[in-house]
Length: 147
Image (tube, rainbow, N blue to C red; front, side):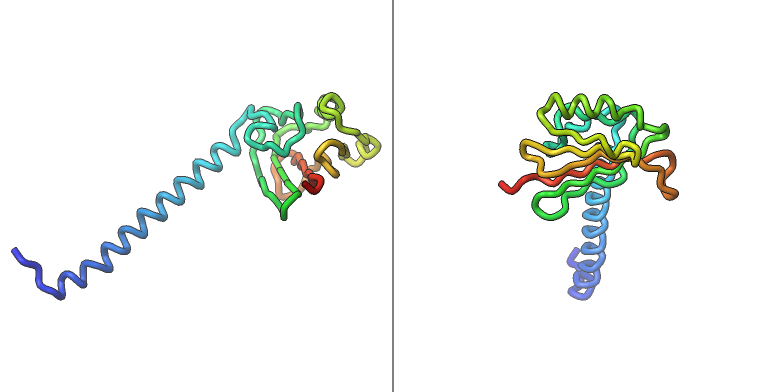
C-alpha cells in the first residue's frame, strides 16, 4: 500500500518529536547517573577529583550540592552532611600535612582550614550551617598554580 504524499509529510513532524523525546530522555538519564555518582555515600574525596588534596576524605552520608570548575585553575566542591563535621578537622589537617601541604589552622574558630603547596596556590576546607541546607555544608575550594 502506497502512502499519499501528504501523509508522509504529516508523519515527519511526529517522528521528529518522538526522536527529540528520546534524546531528552537520554540526556535526563545521563544527568541522573551523574547525580547518583556524585552523591554516592562513602566515596573518598579524591575519587574522580584529581584536584582534591590527597587523603582528604568526606564523611559517609554526604550529598554533593555543587561540584564545579571555575575558570582554568579553580575548583569548588560543596557537600551537605547531616551531622556537624568539625570533628574531621584534625584528620583533614594531618592528611594535608602528610601530603606536603602547608596548613594554617588559625581560622578554625571560623570553621576554615587553609592550605597551600605543591600544585595548590591556595585552598580551604570550610564548614558552615547555611539556612538553605539541611544539616551542615562542607566546602572545599582549591586554586591550582599556573601550569
